[in-house]
Length: 473
Image 1 (spheres, rainbow, N blue to C red):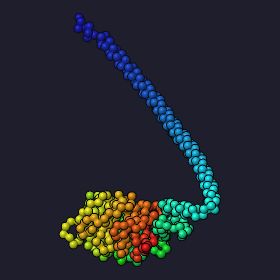
Image 2: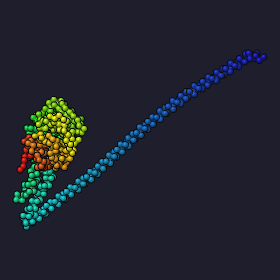
Image 3: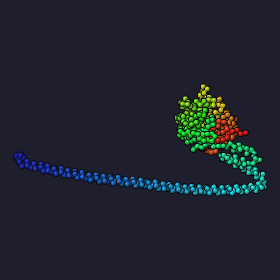
Image 4: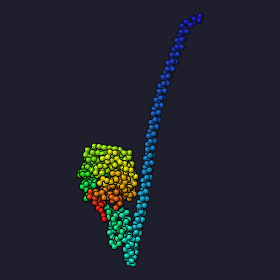
């Protein structure tokens, strides 16, 4: 019975109906899911648009904030500038007030000095009326004191004027003593540079060369200092100038490490040698003019063929080398520097260079014209005279209280000139100081005797100065 009922047509219809209904429900569910998906996509698009709008607003807000920050920074900078300008204005006003006060005080002091001078003059006239001899002596003593002060202050003309006005009947030891110095003040200025003069040299025929801190060397007429050629090419200080023995060439060394050779007639550059790593300081021609030696901050001594610029010899020391010199007979080469060591190489010897210990950095060297003595100058102010043959110290010249940076023998070797920042001193062959020449200002740069020994030149600040170097009895 049960099997018959299951196989009846009515039962199949019910199953089909249920299947149709299930399909309808599934279709409705799919439609609902599609609608839901569309709604979700629309919502997602809406949210994305809103998010993009928010991001745009945020970016605009950030831009506005950055613009506001920049404007605020500019305002702060303007305020700072205004504040600095105000402070500078206050400082300028204060400086102007101080200058005005100083000028007023100076004027008052000058007025008081003039009034005091008038008063003293009146007193002198009254005293002279009472005791003319005593008053004359007092005036003479005052004149001597003023002459001494003027000489110490590097006044080149006032000492001689004051001494010339002293009555001959009152001139004593003090007058002749001061006259010896006043008579040796600067006699001429042979041209100026735009910066401090660092080196000077005479050619054998009397032509003059000078160099400065700005990298320029100048060839001059020794009679009037007129420029005949201006040599440019160094970058920085020119440390040395030197003529070849025949006077046809000029060598310069520079802070740029270059050693340059020039035609001394035309001023045309002939050779430029990249000689040293760091500054090139000293240079010297051999007596025959065939070799050129240079030393520099890298501690090297280099010897060149002067015609071609080919290096023929070199050596290196531990410390920088500052000075080099050939002996006039051509047998020896001396060099020294910051290590306080002076070395003398003899071409006829079979041993290494002879070391001579010094008390400080060797700043300058000079052989005597007969090649028997070597003079070294060191940074403590001492000048040492060495016996070249034995290496022994003959004498030490003391008188400078600061670095001695330049040396020069006169042509016959009877006198030696030494230069420090403040003064030039003259010595005889026995080491006796003969004279001190006051520098007119700005420091002494270089030192050289004229070929006839009658003039001594040096750099005085930005000027090439000349002293009369003829012997005085």
